[in-house]
Image: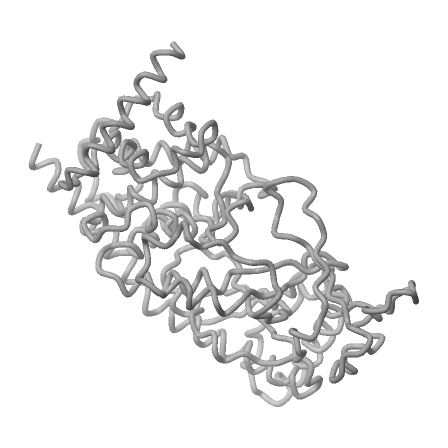
Amino acid sequence: TAVAMAVQVSLWHHFLHAVRSREAPRAQDYQRAENEVLAVLERVHALDSRFLVDYSRDLGAFQFSLRSSEDPLDVEVPLWVDAEALLIEELEALEPGDSPALCHLGVPREAAGLEQWKTEDVFSACVDESDVQCCGHIVPGKVLRVLKDLLVAAIVYCRHHRLIPPGSLNAASLREEQLCLSLLVSSGWRKIRFNVVPVVRRKQGAPTLEWTQLMPGFPEGTLRRIVGHGVDLVPASTQHWRTSSGYPLTQLLGVLGSLRGHRLDSLSILDRVNHESWRDGGQSPGLTFDHLKVALLWASALFPTPEDWAELQGAVYRVLVVLLCCLATRNLPHPLQPRHNLLRSCGLDLSAVYRRVESFARRPEASLRIHATHLGPGAPPRVDTGVKALLQLPASDPAYWTTAYFDVLLDKFQVFNIQDQHRVLAMQSVFQKTKALRREES
């Protein structure tokens, strides 16, 4: 009924208002915490000029303000090295869908200006003297060990000289052997964990990014400009590096924020629901903010019109149907490297996660009630229980990964609301096809 719909609309907007009310204080907490980390990294650079401080990538506060979850945040420490002069020796992926290609970073025999990267603390010389091109490799495990020792020394210095408040920075986890160096910073009443990651910035010669599938969702030229900046290489193990395209994805998120509609609002709502409901207030393992961010990027490409994002509930469901499909098929393709499945090796019980997300999609009201005054009669479920078979279709036939297929899912959840006749006809055509498939199978 119209009254029920009005209650629904107000529930979504109440929830969004509650999420938004935290954005400014979260951004301020982040800024204070980041300032402390930067003070430490400035001292690291003063101790060893091979490790740089990067002030240019200022999207951290923006991204943190969108989140309710407390997952660690990466802080990149670029290495002062002429990356174009290095040899990238790619290794074959063990099987399709594996993480991004692993590589060694070779130092050419004849290259000038790389002497500081041939020292024993970060370099391993080639055993095979017959290699005419490469004299050895920059070893990520060694780089991490040097950076860890520098961080410890820098924290002691900053505390002694009162560059950081007493007791605000906990470096206990630096003692652990791992691929990122973890710092816990107290800011206001909040504790923020930063993972300090050494990166090699490289524009040419790095593995290419495939971005054409995302094009419909972004202004012309934007994708080409962002992806044209190249990719970073980060430690994948003590011996290998891997590509990391986290920064271009965050830039793309920033672009979505400049477009009219509820794209970023839908991400903030789902991250809060994920944190509070699907992950029991952060106590249970589950999806990360990055998983949800990727689902939004795909949804923006699959639903490219302003009409798709004009209404809040419909915007959330556009991300939800993509997320549900990826969980049902156990495949969340990386937006810039679609053969890389971000759910592979994530260590989650994907069936359990799927059940929680589907339960929300069928009956979102319970998760949207912030306090007792929002309690009211429960709405009936939006779909029957047979939706999972429909969601699994792209696993058997990738041709279903289209707007028309996802429009069928929106229609199932009663949030299609599109007037464009071409879209309506395309949706109905796919719907008839899925009905015929289900008849054959039954």
